[in-house]
Length: 323
Image (tube, rainbow, N blue to C red; front, side, top):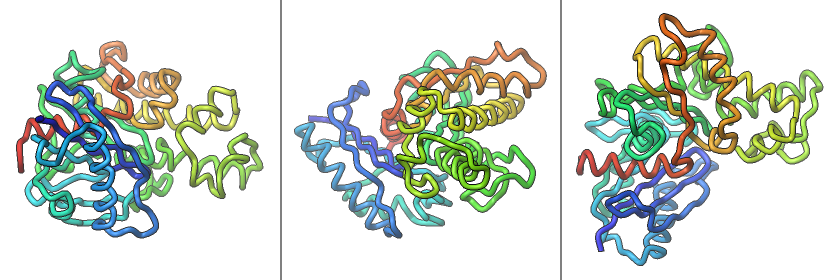
């Protein structure tokens, strides 16, 4: 039995997929990302337990795996496999490929999560018809990926596509990376939670989420945001639409630089909200675009949803081979 595996290590969850060579999903396992100061070794140990579970569900063994890809929320040095910086996991200059390979007991290919998601949408999902694609993935943070002429673009040191840390407002909100004014500080689950907290505490605004979330909305789920949004919660709608307008503005910046045919939006928050967030994105896009009609660029929602990132990790491993 020959199979493949893709692993998505997110800021709040880990998702493992076992797939065949045609990208059909044979099994999956999902769990929470270790928090509370967990070491990279401990995080990788928990990931192995989930991978064992996924293999058992598929009736497979580790020796059956042909290609193994892992996606993480940070840029990766393509030579050393070192994770540059992941505020979500508390990683900085961590030799994560070496640690994970040792824990899982085999070679693997490791890549930035949004790069993987964009690659999957290009190969198998909403951006399949296009050769030049940019992806924005909105979850705990905000990541990006770039496809140029059908190839994933990583840049000179693997740092290309960090679109969440594009500065969209000078001296703006503080981002988890330490900078100010990053897109991620305006459009991400972390940003939405912080903005809701500020409005409730400082401006005495009301939201139904105050009843279901912990202090500072730190346990806020994408499904909570979506439910409140669709129920017409005024504050939630305002916060989300403002955030996705900023994403549209950032999209206009990227289109001015790269001129892609297609922009694809994914991640847990986008999956929960679906096409409802396209309107504020398009508004931010069209009002800030230079030099071309907004209709010349296709803006689409991810077709693969939660599976995009781990599937892309596996596709990336298959394309690159062992590194």
